[in-house]
Length: 134
Image 1 (cartoon, rainbow, N blue to C red):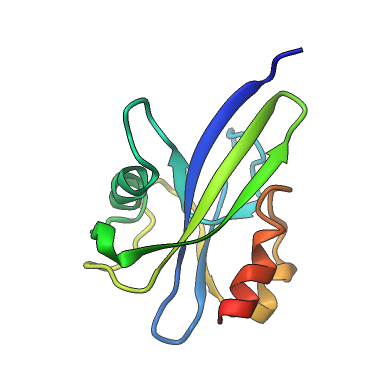
Image 2 (cartoon, one colour; image 1 turned 60 degrees about the vertical axis):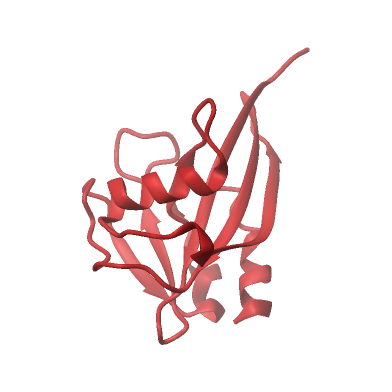
């Protein structure tokens, strides 16, 4: 049985106080109401870094340079209807102010409190990497 492969790039934006940005998936989307790291699907011909630069501009209104994206770890998760591979990058420097441009709720969270937020199954194992880093 073949399963659909989905490549998604995610970014842990870390502010000057060491907090991580989470975005809540809006109603009407799969896994609505769950908190996740910003990012999105990698389009054909796109590298994950390019995806994050595009998605962070579209979703949050910030400009990120590729050299400010540092790969940290990745998630590998089999959902019932697709397989997800998701590299997670860390970014501490960007231009502009983080703003919700797509109606998603945003919150800055201390790493030790990340487990208090309901996240998609693929995102949950990433928390320990961020707690170790920060």
